Image 1 (cartoon, one colour):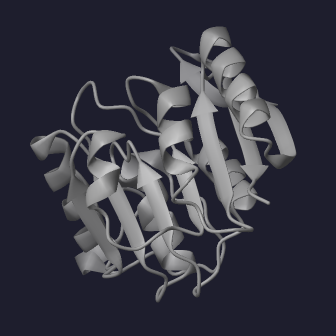
Image 2: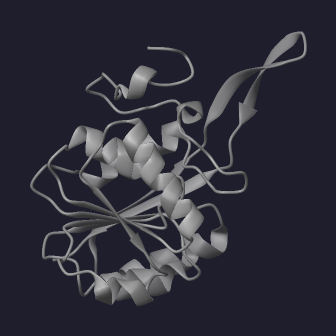
Length: 205
């Protein structure tokens, strides 16, 4: 196992999540959920191999890859509107040897109607209107299901919090993740802050 990623397509060999960000293939300008935030999102999702998981706005595909490694028989759908980014997700799935991720090309919430099976778990990582996506996915979510949504803006936090309240979600939690990493800057090392991220979660009665 090299420092830059899995060797010869070998998957992440550990039971715990937390693949380093630099191990994933990337496209400049396409967002990536940082490792520390990704681990928090996975803990809030409460996945298992028997639960169907949708990741909306999957971006680089880091979350579907980690979820698939944790639950190798769970049906996972990664939803991404951009063809080039969808192909990036597929490459990252191949890189880590996961085979249970279906990449759905489409723009949420419109494309959600095309998905045949209702989800038990949903993560909203991106989209033009987070609250609109939340309202669109809620009728499809199975009873007892969970939605996790992430945003880095106060406007997104307000709209998602309001959306969970309107939908009468239970067990609503909001966690603000402030992450610092020790990085070298010239001859010195300093703690550098990542963009603060709000992680919201709620359950359907």
